[in-house]
Length: 161
Image (tube, rainbow, N blue to C red; front, side, top):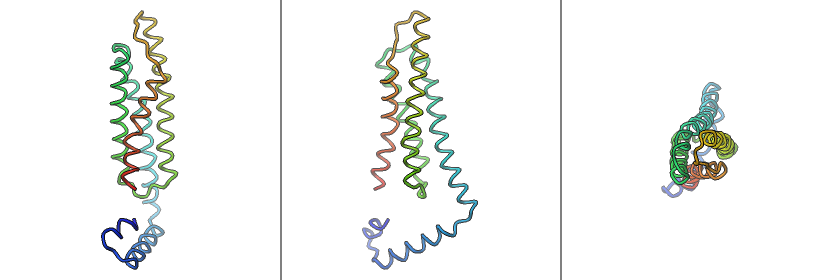
């Protein structure tokens, strides 16, 4: 914040005064507002986790019907779109601290990776039972999803600095 205000032409005294006012306002926050902020963070985590699970279930018929190339492309698109959704939700949460960002960057992708491993393994077993030859590598699909999900968040964090 100091760099941004300095770049806008604020003096050191003005920046110090604004920082004091913001710290005082943070200390005097109403307890209900703090609970709402925490609830919003947990809601964002839930959206990320539930969105990942729903997208993996949406990919089941796609994985059954399509070959590897289309499966990878659609997995990448879905991961990227959910990543953008999470960034849209959290971009205005100025109060997020380092541990919040760490939770979002680690928890959701790890759950997504495990979820995709399970779903793709089940799809491969189902394809085997049906006699279809569309087998997919669960680790590759999970990693594609993970990378594409995290890209918008990394761009957000980089642009924030």
